[in-house]
Length: 276
Image (cartoon, rainbow, N blue to C red; front, side, top):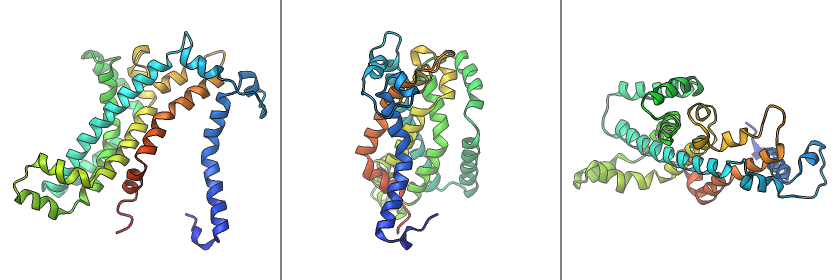
């Protein structure tokens, strides 16, 4: 890791600006490509007349399902994120505050890590067979359950860190006052771990929004998500680069909006425990 403190202010700002450009350049390239024609993009023209043709084709084209894909992704990502946050928060509170045996905590967390290391695509075939046998293939429910399963181990670890830092004295005081577990969670724990909920929720939402191989296996046209919609622009004989760039630019909007409104919670959540 580079120690920026040993450089002067001007050098630090220059290095930070350079790092920012490295991160932002791919996004700028995609957005710029979305305003080009296919010919201008393939010819590598830096000077071009901006056009909204690609956006019009993506939004209003007769063969485009992007709006349906956008709706599907929104439903699936929001639903799976809410379920993951609820289950992970309850599980973390149970593990760290209800006096389970130490081996139970270690075993469950170890299993979560092992499961998180398994590539989700290896489970897609089994999920497809299971969902088809119970009538959940090509349904929101099946895909939401799959995304919940994929993101739950990560969320459990993250929420465990925040729940563990909740002062035991507050929980004990609430119990002495006669509060039941649901009341403790709602009135004591959730307000304290709100930054963690925001940080974990943003990550779960983005991972669900961008998930491709499992959704490709479990969905068809009616339930296809944004990544699948973007992938359709790569055909066997041609690739519609500008339409793909326009769809990619539009797909960034939900995460961008979430980051704007939840920025202060995310910073507090991701840096929690770094400074005591």
